[in-house]
Image (cartoon, rainbow, N blue to C red):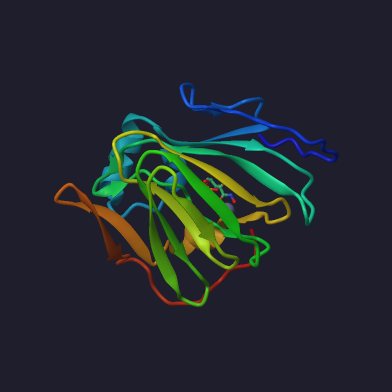
Length: 203
Ligand code: PAN
Ligand code: ZN
């Protein structure tokens, strides 16, 4: 759960690589397989896995700040390794509610991709390996995907007033998917992606 911060003092924090956490996080979000309904292509494999266990796909630790323009929220995201059929464990993905807000990611460990797209139909897939910084400009929805065999650890920083809009991706998915082919990640069109530019503004 997030606890809102109204006042803030300068602070430092440390990333604990061994325990995969941050020092004194303000929030710890755990997202499981059940929160990804409709996002994986192979529904029968998804349902079968879910019946057995609601596996943890990824976790997020955050250091919060007042949710106002000028402040920043930062944290650590940990996407665990694994697959649902040919697709890898990944985050839900979102637009920022304040669409014109950017984000910086810095890959610390593991191997992944960030899939991104705009409401106008541009898309991009960037590889993430340790010490790669990725700039996600305003307007770009983003989803991180772990294509490796260990945890994908990333530091992220975004404007504290950005907010998260999940509903557009939950309804339509991303235009592009990354699937495993001959033991390698491969970018494909999302066969279930229909229509265009239907950006939903409600949460
Ligand atoms: C990140 C993401 C984090 C989890 O902090 O929130 O990677 O992804 P979802 O929010 O899509 O579940 C971020 O992009 N914040 O804006
Ligand atoms: Zn974001």
